[in-house]
Image (cartoon, rainbow, N blue to C red; front, top):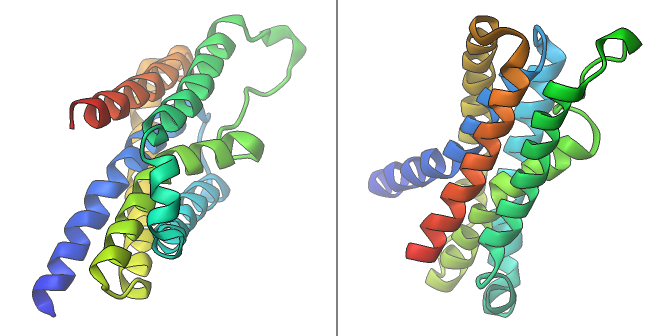
Length: 190
């Protein structure tokens, strides 16, 4: 059982890396993130990482045959959309309107980012289902590890954002696009 836990933590850390990277870019985009930002991002990313393996587990092979061929394109498209939007807003956001910059820890942006970074967890759930292994403990660990990595990512992003300054949102957008490209390359090349 100890080896199983080690394996689960390794898988959880690997799955959390996309969320970690996205949280770095969110920490750069949000001016002075507070506890609400940390909570919203870590809670939603952790929740989606927790739920996706369970959905995959019960979706079984039926769902895998429909999603496996294009799951990486879905993640890429979602990250590309949010990333390009962040880049656009960094350069074309009108300062004189006093309208606050778009907060990626709120609304549809948050949901899109949470889904995009947790699609791989769906495949893990499918694998565990095929192997006949239990799903609840791995899902809890995957969600918790993702939440912790998200908090660390926001903190790192906040510090980088303070150094980069006003264009941190553009850098964060570029990072999201790069993560999307990385996901496509990993899935395409195996």
